[in-house]
Image (tube, rainbow, N blue to C red; front, top):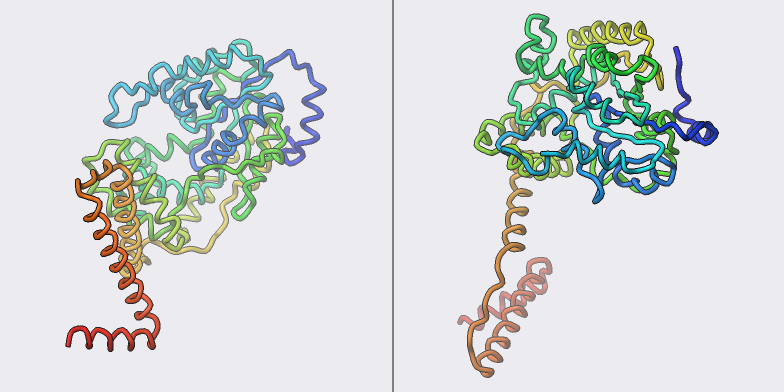
Length: 419
């Protein structure tokens, strides 16, 4: 099967420089979900200038609409409760116009929602770049890791299915049309997703990039993408501003139980309080406990994942990496049923404390400045002296709390003054 030495970016760069640069290329990275896309996208955003210097345009910033909103516009998506969101309406055409106006030899567009495109939407995406040779890139991860990550992501996005219900639904062949199975397979049935894109893009221009095994440095995946697209991953030295944090098993179970209490929030409100606040607090302060698969779930992932890998191999798509990396392996971890009430309580208290601190600091930051009280110079001077005296007494009390000698001295002083 055709392949690419994705880790050897210098080799690819020299090959690219020697090629006929009169032909422009557009790479549509369509996901899949939970395959390192957030890290890749944040890294590309942070290193736009470096990519551009190597002939690769990663649209965005002040000169382009957001890629996320552009893809949502292409697909007709809108966040719940947003109405006709002005950030989205017309964003796809704005991105396309910006790409067409530039002379960049290579364009990289990355958004996992492209994996949800219908045949008509895929055709529209390809047709939007008539001056480019369009390639489709799909990153693929082994099904066992996808299954556990997908449940945690569903919960972070308002889901309240228990792990047992989620896993059973996904594995039930009689339930592909109802959630949570419908949402899972719409995002993870890679043979079906690529069959849609194959209607408008030749097989030789649909590239499967395998996600390295657990524990591999993220640079390996970026190197594979760079080797394919034509940039040197080693030069992307600006750190990704944000990655899609994992909150582990305890955090996920806590969020799952909290979600039904947040049903009145629209999507933007929910994202603010959950993804941009609670999730980050949990990721920082709650110990990460890995979710493990039971024997039956692992056996299902191995059998079903093997069928999907065989389908990719049979279709003849070019592969960057190794399809053997898609073989699920047993990994240590715990089940949600093993999470104790004590662990949930500790996580809830830590998160509540963080949320209270965030609320307090946000309130003070947005509070209008206090007005000054009208008073004369003598009154203001006397007030300042009293304030200095109070601060001195408070400092002495603080020292007394940690110093026994100072504590005894302060106690004796208080007895004398109150006697």
